[in-house]
Length: 257
Image 1 (cartoon, rainbow, N blue to C red):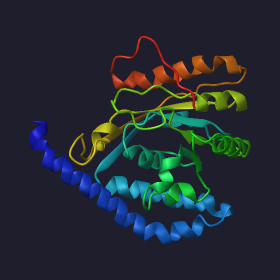
Image 2 (cartoon, rainbow, N blue to C red):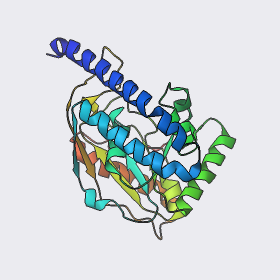
Image 3 (tube, rainbow, N blue to C red):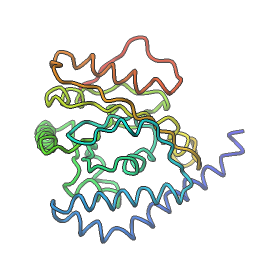
Image 4 (cartoon, rainbow, N blue to C red):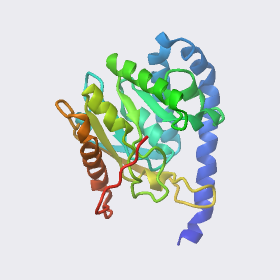
């Protein structure tokens, strides 16, 4: 069956990429303007929201979100979703109406066109192999939290190679949440891997349909000490994994940033 669907999946991937590139070229001059000054970052964020929503609509992806009422209306928190697809980022910008700061890996700055979202200074890129860069990024994250801005961190660090199974979580987001005593907001992307799986042009699932997203209740960290990072990490892992209807690991392995 997959063999017969392959041509359709390839065509859809080409179509999705074309829509992304064309729409990004159109909004690019406005992004450059809004991202030129930090005071205009909130307006750039609104433009990113509309751009992401437009891409989902044109490519036939319909968001189905449960638990929208669980999103905190004020104060800083860390959005903590599983990473299953390139579609995840567009969904996040379409769901969260409050300005948030995206934390991504340093490699993004080499992506054509797309890098403007993350190298302008609005979002934060982290080079985990460079200690000074990591420390600098951590200080910036702390400042954003102090301003009351939410952060968005993929705890797996990248798209899992075995989606929908989760990759082990890195500890950075959870250590930061405990340090700043702010909530973790677990988010499960249930079907995004079917919409646009990261497997190259000739492999993996792709196609229009429902992007089911579950926003869980925030995990509070007030009063939690730094020795409980692993426990918090494991709790978030099991909450996010729950709706995926896949066997969970008997023992949870942690990774450090």
